[in-house]
Image (cartoon, rainbow, N blue to C red; front, side, top):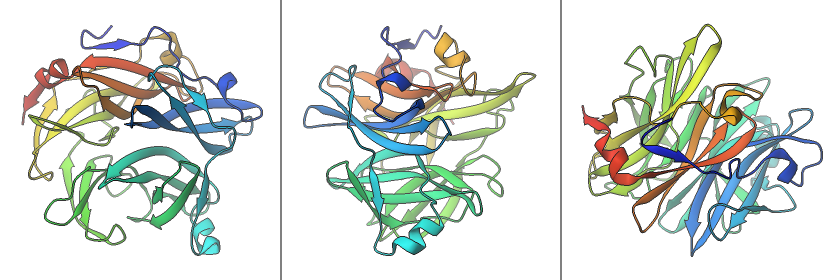
Length: 307
């Protein structure tokens, strides 16, 4: 087991039988925040036919969550055009707090056109209003920095085909048109992050830099193997990666991570820094369950080497 990260003894924090969705088969990859003393989570939830819904859930302690009875509604000014590129498939949501607003970044998918990033905004976590599709298809796992830099919003994202599984960064003045895209971190080790590397949590501000809990993918004879790592970006220049965990901070070990619809997956999607210096890391396990692990911030920072 990892010496840095401790799994919550009550894992999974949410399982299919906890959800109000009829014939729920999976609940995982939930983005979470802490706002006004309350934990709010948005969860990828699937029925028996693998149709995807996003449900919100709330908690007072960060461990025991109560799902809302109905899934989120995604709306747009031009719903016909919007549905062309979403087909009612919205998954792996992250909650990004920027200038007091709750921006939801997620994967929007259709069988015909593929996967792309969707970006919306919510006030009540019941309805998400479409803002933009920031990039072309074959992009996902987008998170936004909590602050603007020289008037620009800044996004981390992971491209698929032409991007080759690397982590990219881009920026925007208005959240609609994004540019200045660069590879900010590559899948360079050839080992634990040999196939893909991408943002998991929206960036967390620390004294040493912007901390992002990441996901990384490698392969074995048994298939893909998803682990969690960490990166630090410069506080003033987010285009500058300054440190990278020397290996995985978390790998599939518990039975609910090694056995499931997609075995051997830990997939972090949010990190909440508590006042006592502990970091709550929420993650999907084996594409079946929503789980929680905790770590001391200092332990994670000390496990990161300068690049």
